Image 1 (cartoon, rainbow, N blue to C red):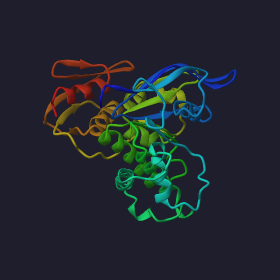
Image 2: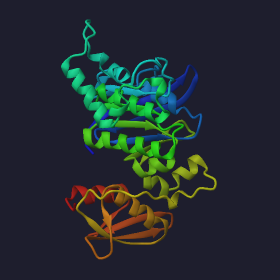
Image 3: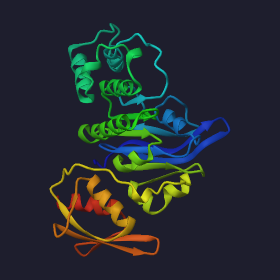
Image 4: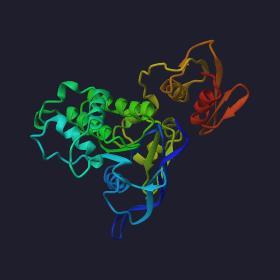
Length: 320
């Protein structure tokens, strides 16, 4: 992840007239970062997304990209609004992503066509190009809309509930695609979602809305271990501390992990999510210690107070 701030939200208040949904929030979305915005139903996530995208006027504060105001060349947005142009083909719908760049002649150039085809290939929907929007499933339409956002060729992409009403396979496909777009194309990607299980296992960070009209940010596993999710969602019948997903190992590092219980499971998840293997008698020795409700991680005579610090140290210190 690039530490440069791409999208900067400063002292932002969101709402309608006297009704404030969020007050004085300051957040940063970095290049190459995949962030999930989460919170209870009805708390105002969609309004926040629309305000960030410049579609709704803020009550106070500002949103800037690279120190500039939001422009069609700087931010692409995918909303849950129904597509009314049902007779358009998928290809024609994706073409609309290039319209902010067209001259008064409204004619796509060779470069525009190349960018559109690249977006279609990146999303993997070549077989859908000539199908009409009305013929697409919900999952297929979401992929087309993401391709349109890619065709817009902006440094930031913001999406509101892109996995809503999709089955598990389609939800997982969308989330992994968005993470890959952020990491491989060095874009900032912000997604509002209710997919708690997938967000915890794919996101680089979480923006968690709170009932006091503020937003708590953090590493996904840290927010699990410090009970932030339990406090916000008041979950019933679902233990976050047993969640797990299989990850591909992309780093050249394996570590030995000494610990037990759910802190072991989530530490292992954080390491594997970042491409670091966990196996006995290999690589760096990591020990988990519990101090009441707080955990620390020991490695090479250093102590880390969060999994985020541990993982960043393993990567930045060239242990991989």
